[in-house]
Image (tube, helix red, strand yellow):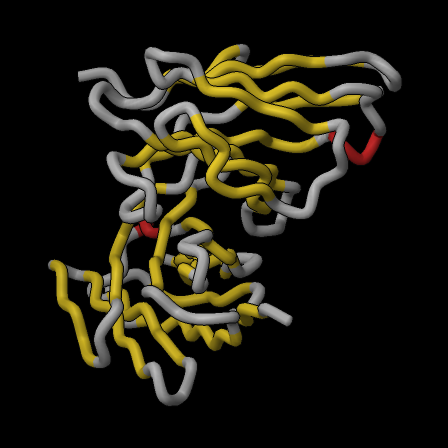
Amino acid sequence: GQNIDQPTEMTATEGAIVQINCTYQTSGFNGLFWYQQHAGEAPTFLSYNVLDGLEEKGRFSSFLSRSKGYSYLLLKELQMKDSASYLCACLDSNYQLIWGAGTKLIIKP
Amino acid sequence: DAGVTQSPTHLIKTRGQQVTLRCSPISGHKSVSWYQQVLGQGPQFIFQYYEKEERGRGNFPDRFSARQFPNYSSELNVNALLLGDSALYLCASSFGAINEKLFFGSGTQLSVL
C-alpha cells in the first residue's frame, strides 16, 4: 500500500530551527512536495524535490533521500507566522499526489 | 491575475441531498483536481481533469462525480449526501497534466446535517 508518515504535532521557539520529517512508501515515485497550510486556509506550495539532496529557499530548506524514502523540511529563524500545518505529498507512478496527514507546528514566543 | 476561485465558500445540506461545487482555475491552467480534507488530515484525492478528460479518480464512491468545461472550469457533484461527507473540498489547478506545483483555491466547507 501507499503510506506517508509525518509527526502529528511539533513545538518550537520563535527564532529557533525546526526539522519536520517525512517518510514515504509509494507505488512509484516522481517527486515530493511540501505544502504549508494555515488553519482554515488552502495549502500553499513550499518546495519540490525529485533528486537526492538539499534544496534551499530562504528560511526554508527541503531534503530528499530516495533510497531511504525520507524527506525533511527545515525551517530556520522561526517566526510566529510559521505556525501552521506542514503537509508532505508524493507523486506516485500515475503522477497522482499521495498526502500525509500533516504536521501541526506550534511556535512559542 | 485571479487565483483559483471556488464557490460557494460554505454550504449546509441535509442527508440525502445533492450538492454541486464549482471551481475556476488560474487563467491558462488546463488541469483541475478535487480533494476532500477532513479536519486534522491531509487532502484525499477525488478527481483530476485535464483538457476536459478525466485523468484520475481516487477511492471515492460513485456518488461523487465531476466534469470540466471548455473554459477549464470544473464542477464536483455529490449525490445522496452522508454525514461523513462533511469536509473541506479543495480545488487545485496546474498548467500540465502531471500535477507539478498545484495552486489551491480557498475551498468549500460542506456541512451535512
